[in-house]
Image 1 (cartoon, one colour):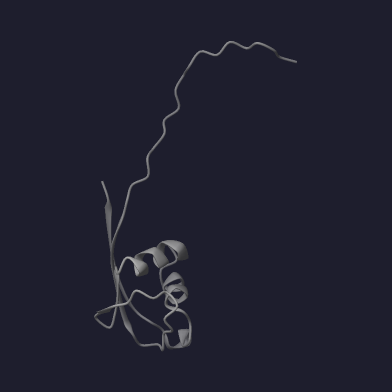
Image 2 (cartoon, rainbow, N blue to C red; image 1 turned 180 degrees about the horizontal axis):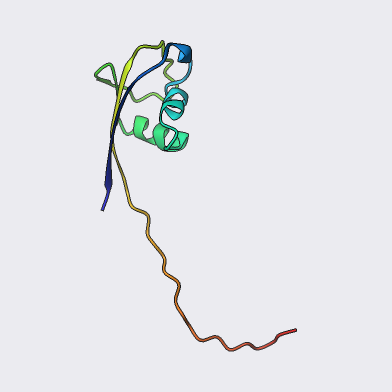
Length: 90
């Protein structure tokens, strides 16, 4: 089952000139820059109410940013107790 992520924030004035993906990675440190870039390319990021699909877009500061995305749960692997015959041991 996917986990829904809804984030909103305002770009800080001191982020003037940064790429959108860099600015968002600073604003939301719980998420990797590559994941944020993926959301931007998937058109899951709104800047001032408009879809932005370019991670290289420069920010000016003061923009309202909204992210509406989903994170797929990773498969969980459980260890199994299987019998092993030791053939050689030093």
